[in-house]
Length: 294
Ligand code: G1P
View 1 (cartoon, rainbow, N blue to C red):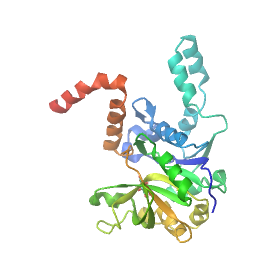
View 2 (view 1 turned 90 degrees about the vertical axis):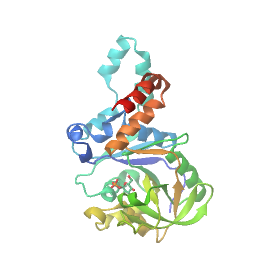
View 3 (view 1 turned 45 degrees about the horizontal axis):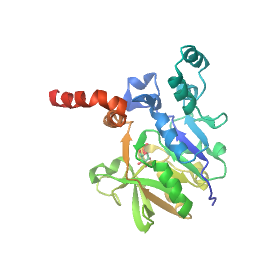
């Protein structure tokens, strides 16, 4: 089992986004805008804050725009320069990943999250890596992945971020079983189950879409049978890896928005807009009035 610095992060972005049709007919769900940035930018920013140096995107058909987004747009930049739009230029420059720090590979068939992760095996190689599901965007002073990297530096092994949910929502997620405490923010994971039947969950701690995994997961995923929803499930592969390696939960206490769901997407927009002083002053009063009126 390899430990040490977490340099690479995998972003599975091949999903069809059916919950957002018709918007996602032509625009990948990861490119939908929360205030003024695409969803994927928030997740990449979270990874950068945690010290990630290489960003691996597992894409699918119709997702080329994501690759373009992480590239230089010469014509646009020349026009901005000609118009002295320095603030806008700075934003573009700041967000541009370093040359050579992105990789794109394709998941050719939608066989599940476990399969998407497996598609990144050659690019990740034999080192522990971060995995961030882009539907979930987080808001907290210290990013979720940064907290996980800090915990991993102490406990090594595999780290999975969890949050508490209402018991009646547990069937929507991967749920972990709780063991002894690890430091201030963690606990040992003693079991896990993907989308448990209502009432059968081992706890109310759900996996929130952030992982630090050891490369041995790829070997397991290679032969992983289909699980919940007839898909190759990452949770099932992690459960197998637990037979030989430690899994620690990082109990994340910030805000999480599931932008893959309509309510989560709208709430993310409201929350990130209210957190921007320039925008808050413009919408705060109107928002309150709107809630009272409609
Ligand atoms: C995936 C994981 C699940 C996790 C969830 C978080 O499920 O399989 O364990 O709780 O992401 O969003 P999905 O949302 O793809 O059904």
